[in-house]
Length: 81
Image 1 (cartoon, helix red, strand yellow):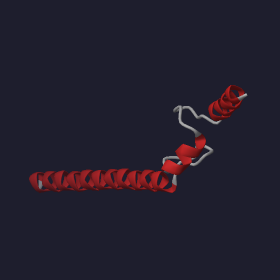
Image 2 (cartoon, helix red, strand yellow):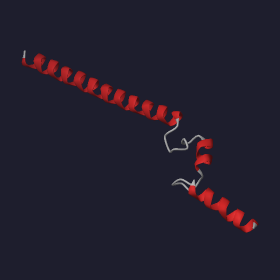
Image 3 (cartoon, rainbow, N blue to C red):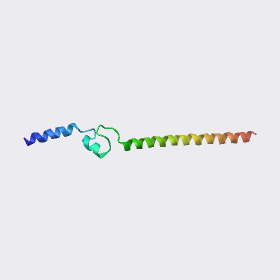
Image 4 (cartoon, rainbow, N blue to C red):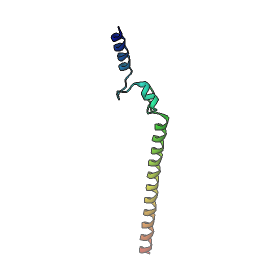
């Protein structure tokens, strides 16, 4: 009888396992993801910050390229004059 109880609880345990082989409850408790597999608030925040940094880098790059172009044009104007 105890054997059947054990196997029933094991089946229940396996049915709640996610892709990573850990139970949903454990994953939720660890805070890496909620029980339904969504990103935690911390992960969402990190991704948003990463996007912001990338956008800022792109802005800085285009800004510096624009300044460089203006300098070159200014030099050419001086040379032709």
